[in-house]
Amino acid sequence: ISLATVMVSHHWRNLFCHLVAAVVAFALGETSYEAVAGALERCEFEALRQRLDARDSLQMTVWLCLFCVNQHASICGGLPSEPARRDGQTEEDYKEALEYFHRETHDPVTNQ
Image 1 (cartoon, helix red, strand yellow):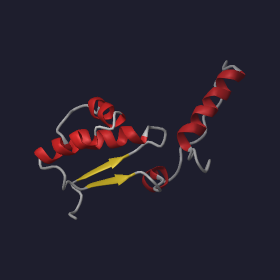
Image 2 (cartoon, helix red, strand yellow):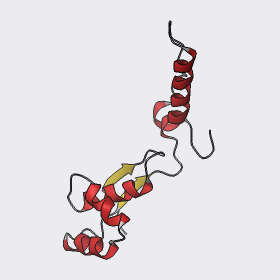
Image 3 (tube, rainbow, N blue to C red):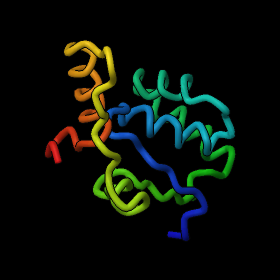
Image 4 (cartoon, rainbow, N blue to C red):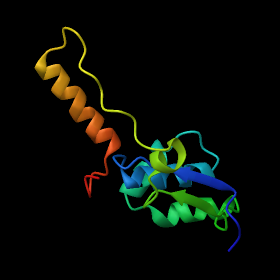
């Protein structure tokens, strides 16, 4: 095992398959992960492995920053403030803004 030369971060609401596809696409030198995601969904694992092997990418080490680091707290010093109510904003629009804020700033599993 070697030191990672690439760090990949993950947004919790993105699909894990897309994260894997993005890393594999990067290792394959591709600029989009769409084709790799399709191959993963079709379970074309051996074909992907062979392509990675042909590029000598099977030994690539990638740091995945995705499971337990609250990056807001460690990088930004905390979470952003809850949105303020704007003049003329309807109750429905304000509630929607609060729900969006909550989704963007809280862990969907623990709700913290």
